[in-house]
Length: 350
Ligand code: PMP
Image 1 (cartoon, rainbow, N blue to C red):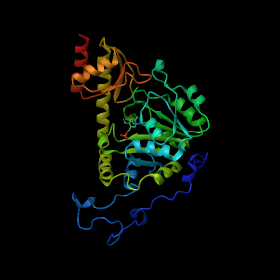
Image 2 (image 1 turned 120 degrees about the vertical axis):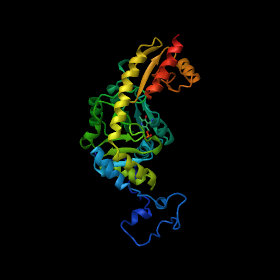
Image 3 (image 1 turned 180 degrees about the vertical axis):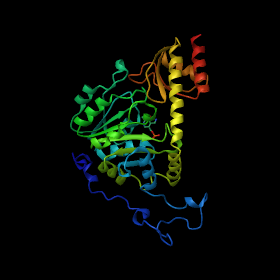
């Protein structure tokens, strides 16, 4: 399948903006090409210049850590930017559609709506720990469906989706399959990143916001075939990743062994918290989690959420969302934070 057949037709011959930093590479005596401030900076002098629009050094470093060539990597202002650009690249407004599998991360639907793109929902099967409804997805595929968004491990339910079912979708669907792996570092099961070469239509999303502890940085990664990545590169704004982010992210990648330590701590706390929650009468079910949060069903979900708020404990209330009755999503905190949560829930049960 050629990507050009899926792409919105007007993008086939679009001419991307060519920035000063695109047009000249190498060392010059003076740079008078980008209307920067020649006298100094309100901060440090090194921030005076526009950053590399193609983030070459950062992509090279990410590529080394992830085992993916730089040409297969797109970087966005959070994964949110990649989600929006994928929809803008492939879906014709007022005509095309995406498939989502609720309950799931809300930005797929929001970005589709912002771009006047239709959304077909094929809910996960709640009775089977929110597994993929493979048959339902196959039935929902019709002309005009351009992208299927799968979130694995899924937000808010925490489970990794069956890789065999995802592979079947990748093989049968003649469109783009986005597998959002924002939480993959917390899972004991493998990422689909190692299978990128096998599927022309696979895009894997990962982010610096979770395991890396850098949500404020706003750096998301999309991994995919060269053609798809090239399209995203052409339609992004020229300097979408700031120089500050590029520099700090390279430093973070040099510290990547720290992540293993965080992940081990978080996973240990997750298992402990899940056990403790299960002991409470107020808790009806703690779903198995491959992420850094737990999806928990309680008696009278919304009431519990409100009472937790009164005690200064904020969790994510999903109790009134479709397919999530009485459920909330609880981020795994530090041990002291988890103790406060548990004490607050225990007090409610008394
Ligand atoms: N995907 C999922 C599944 C998420 O839960 C989130 C954030 N909550 C994102 C993507 C967005 O990540 P980023 O901070 O990189 O925009």
